[in-house]
Image (cartoon, rainbow, N blue to C red; front, side, top):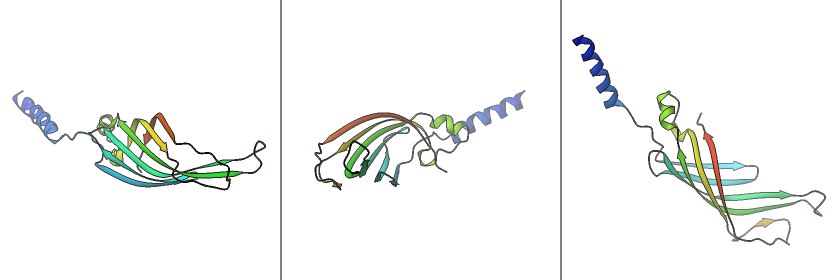
Length: 144
């Protein structure tokens, strides 16, 4: 009985001493290129489960059809700040799933600003206004 108690105590202490708390990466920078834009972004650690994603890029839009005399396009700058909460890192780590590069489920609020600094378009009759949008979202980020 004494031997079983000693072994149990050893495993309990060693698991406590060597346990690592799940945490997001300190800083991750990436480039995204898509059909309707190009962006450079950075995720900076605020705490073990919170990051702030900052992004600057060019958004694009296309319009056309029967309502317009010709097909048009528009490219304009965008600045985005997005706080993210990775809520399941501890559970993923306990199941031995990958949490590198902030892999996991997150809840965020994307705040985007489209300034009227410049635009690129094939239409000269475009009236642009400074735009601000707030979009709550839920997502899953995986790193392969």
